[in-house]
Image 1 (cartoon, rainbow, N blue to C red):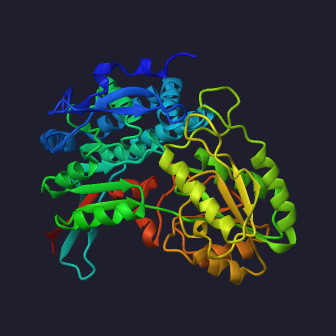
Image 2: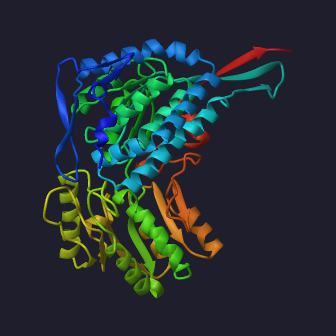
Length: 486
């Protein structure tokens, strides 16, 4: 097995600021670990506030020229990034698996998904447009002019270390904005590799800056407090999102917030159970369950509960667990020991309250941060896992007897990111689509993420949309011009 770290030279494990790869001003570094073994795989620069502000200097200096760059040229650079990621897919995928833990097949899927954002927004870059119209009362004309919002700060999570950055950087560049990305400390290597690729394809210095740090609070706070920053996009927990929204309010920043989820997956008695099982496995186990849109609660209508549960537990129990780079592995390591401990506590709490474990439910011995695929039944309403975001390979199954009952249970959460419904009754599906408080809904489908579709939630799951045409609008301000013309 070749070493995936060979694709990222030591000089590219530093900060990417302006036209240079540089050490942190303090000289500090921090370790990046393989979650499957616990061993250190790299040391990267540990930025402080001075480094963050240096990145903002670079982004601010590059802003005017990048905004004035012809859309077709911006589009070409995004297309070149898409092609480079596609051509180097295997290298990027192995790097993702090494620092994040997901199986290699999952990592390959993430590279394809992340690369697609660059292709999609390459096409959107040349379609940013305003309008010209006659005022209803006559006498003058209305002109609207879209303009890039300005330098953007991105705070990205560890669970999709390429795709979450791509989903922000691509539309920002398409709109004419410059960027500073602060990747998660657990998975900074993939974002550094992306910055290297974008440098190689010719993205100008200062347009894409990457600041790695374990002092995220201080660095991000300083960036948000600087009046040159005009946009914040964050993907992560609702708790951290609330803090960042309060900080962003001081400078009245444009914000896009993709926050926590607590997705309900509903299997109706009239569903095609083969389709429902396939969809549930994808919705629950994609990315080891470490996804904000993962099925967090599975509600099954009573007439099919027994059959669905037995077949689902059988499929979960058949999944193989191991290092993501090993052949045949279905479930890789979780990101860190804290994640394992949290999941174990949620399972123990449910069992203490009366739930039964059908599959899994116990931490394995040995190195690495692993937890087996787990299925629980008879989960009571007061179990913590029905309120908390599990973020791992654990599936609680709850029965229901009426649409009104399950609709109320599904909506009984502060979150509203995603949901899933399996039924062959179109009218029933549409009633759920209108009644569920979610920003996204999969009908007879467990995979809903797509760069061409608007991704985002309601309630405390976020603000704004990423992907689709709506995604580029998040990076544009609109100037209205009134033109006197009798």
